[in-house]
Every structure is written in C-alpha cells, then in structure tokens.
Image (tube, rainbow, N blue to C red; front, side, top):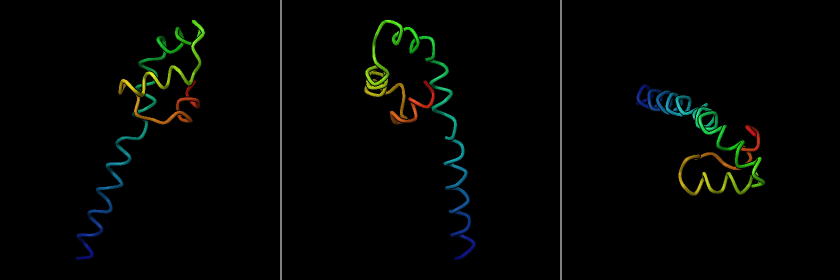
Length: 68
C-alpha cells in the first residue's frame, strides 16, 4: 500500500510540473496582441480580463502582471 501511495504522489508531482511554464508560453504567444492593446490605452486588467474570459489565459491576474 505504501508503494501505491508513493506512486500516486510522484505521478501527481509530475502532472503539476508538466503544466509549469505553460502560462508563460501562452503569454509569449499573445505578447504582440497584448502590447498593442496596452498601447491603444486598455489597462492591463482589462486585457487580462478579456483574455481570461475568452479562455485564452488560465493564469491569474498577478501572474499576468509578472509577465507584463
């Protein structure tokens, strides 16, 4: 039973690690559009809210601000 629990624990860690950095990849793919929106006068919050609502970004606003 301990082996089973260890296996589940390790698999869960691998699953989380695989998703790490995914948000940055998405941000970089949208970077030119985000920059254009900011230059047009939209706030970072408005840009994030639109992208989040449409499902383009899954990360939270503070993470978005780290990238911006």
